[in-house]
Length: 355
Image (cartoon, rainbow, N blue to C red; front, side):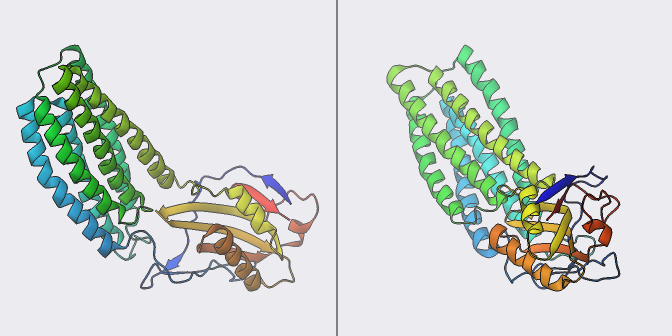
């Protein structure tokens, strides 16, 4: 197996999007005209769906949203009365929880809309946009909470430990229920995972707040409240970085985690009848929806359709990629010549994989 590198053209990886015709699900995959007058492109997929089970997941998220919204009012009130930054911080975090869940619900509805017109993939990326907004919210709040916590470390106010303990205990129960509800949804969706991370972080925040309340009540060490806020901020920072990083990977058309394009290209080139694979792009439309396109050259005497079927079967079985657009053509004699430097395309993108 050999490979040779070509300079990248002006298009980014993933810019060769599959041609799709609408169907009741995601549409069938149309073909591309070949270079030698062939019309061998195309791909198919078994019937299945992507992302979340909208109806069931919306019910779980809506229940969690109602639960959290009711508790926010209580926590803000008690936080002000107790002069507890930890409680107010938790309340602010729960506002972002409610926002995250609401945004997730809106994104689900948008993602469920069928593809039409210029929106050839529908609004499936709305879920990824929601996850990115959630991640950025984490980062902004982490900075603000850190600032407030440091300020209170320097000059700690009086904190009503008993009120903090009771409210934090109730908050733990609320967040356990909310986390359980969202965990019942499809967490393979980055959108749902973003909402889940908000709730999970808030659960840890309430645990830290409960501990700080106990410390304040038993020892009078008021700075424990600010220290708990710093712990919450650190957790938020971690979750925010993960969500922003993963959503950017999808927006920038990076290959899905666990899939190495060069390894996939070499594997496809090893399929019987294939002489070369180039213009290989692997990207993610939305969570759980990988896609692939490539230009494949086969032996002059082989059957392009049969080779394409072999390639689709390998992609499905080894990489769980079922949404593919494969342009399959017979190789020119010059491409088959040993040591040739002339490719089948004038400007192939990325590595060219040959047998």
